[in-house]
Image 1 (tube, rainbow, N blue to C red):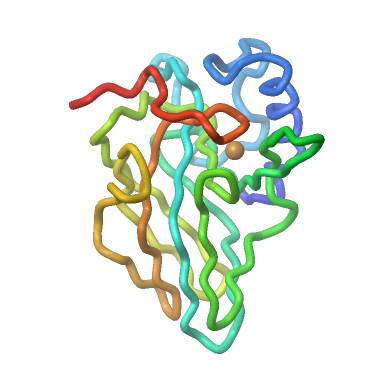
Image 2: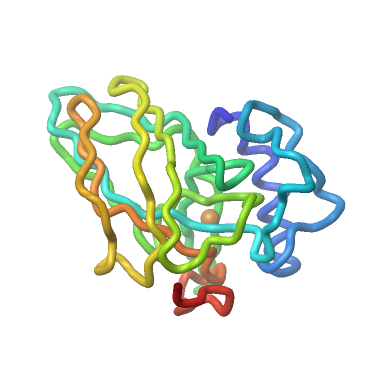
Length: 194
Ligand SMILES: [Cu+2]
């Protein structure tokens, strides 16, 4: 799903999240309205109990031109969106990034706890410690690149070798079930050792 197209729906979902809990998708939500191949999984395969997950990573741009992350997708979730954490009245909350994530020329962008992250909405299966799943990122200039994301406890445990796509290098990627919306929770209860 194009990130921009997801914004309106995501605002609704995040509002529901803020009013309720992160632990279950509201039944009234149903399937996302905008469909692509990643949103068509049948309900019978929907094993999630946590509902949402998070992916963190770093993107370095060694090129002379800016690039943009325009889409993210994984079979592990119905939707993947770039979120940012904003602080309002000393409370952190997540909102979909307004517009594509820009990777400036010669700079790196870090998606890390408490800040930018890729939100996995509507997990097709729980994310457990040690799980590895593919996440495909689409950049305006560098094109598509798929990275193997492993669920670990924190960034220090991130696994996998850096992946190159054009002038970009994606590194330090890892995942976990969604943290509390303040981004400060430690290990989610659903995360069990392999
Ligand atoms: Cu989020």
